[in-house]
Image (cartoon, rainbow over all chains, first blue to last red; front, side, top):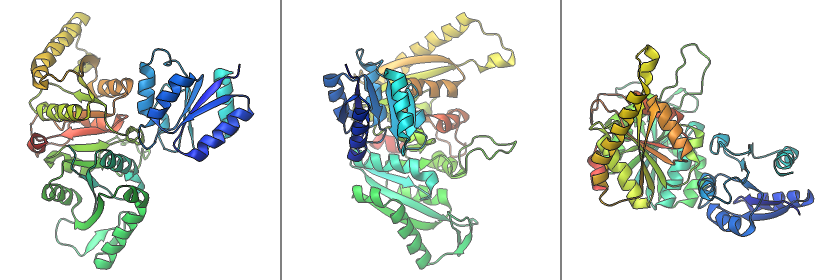
Length: 117
Length: 307
């Protein structure tokens, strides 16, 4: 069964781009436009990996991550931070990787493959 | 709670992170935001010249130049200003910290937001030491309201408060900080972490401390928090008490990071309560520079009582 990736980003262009990119590489995807929506999608879809933006209109990335860590079922779900902010790599220390926009998609794919296969 | 916020800025990239917090807070909490810039004069006396913050050059001050600076500020924060209607730009010449304090007093602001320093990162010199800027130092020691400081870029990415760390050493001046932390926690429904770091740095200079002694002191500190602060929470029960041993600033930064704190509240200086003579305490200064979230320095009870 294809592994599922949850894409959390408030920029619809990034979401569409990542959805297409991951689907082309054999992954299933689902998406959310901010932290609170992501929490709902997370519980419904049970993804194998999450890509997370930091700055979003309502619930920001780090706060979503904090809630994620409190969920016994999902706390081990790997997270890749994809952000336009400088210093973003320090926001979520336990993330699998932290990537700054604009990013190299091959590099991202390698991280995803190394993490969930 | 934050009806009016003063965001003191150079409108240069060094203030971008503080700007992110200032605009987000204002929008989130419906605050009026004053985006405030002081055109620094080169001396303390009257001057027709000001220092251009971007080039560092001394330029003649006149209405044209002021208009141009305001225009530049508008351009810098164009998107944010557009998104938050209750914000306005103000600029005037003077000594930065004096004018920031004056503006905060005159406009009765509840909070001042600033970056920690405009200086570049490690310049490679032998004497380099991380330190906060002099304007911040002067503002924090005399401000009647809490000063929210954004030290690192990562400190700006939280978006609202829901997890507050109050760092205390049980001094009298920590009381105002406690009151502020409690009021923010209560107003916004946050978890309040009452945190004390037991200082064991004397070990490095040869003082022998048995583990029993350290842990006895930690138990005692916990008891002290229970006695000093809990009764004043008046039934507010969303709190946790935590005592760690180590070098205080390291422990506070670690604790905040591990708990994904989005605000640290500390007293400006603990030795001399409400003093306008002391600089930012060494512990809070290091926390400001190292924390992964904004740090509020509180020196006086004045504004907090009104909140």
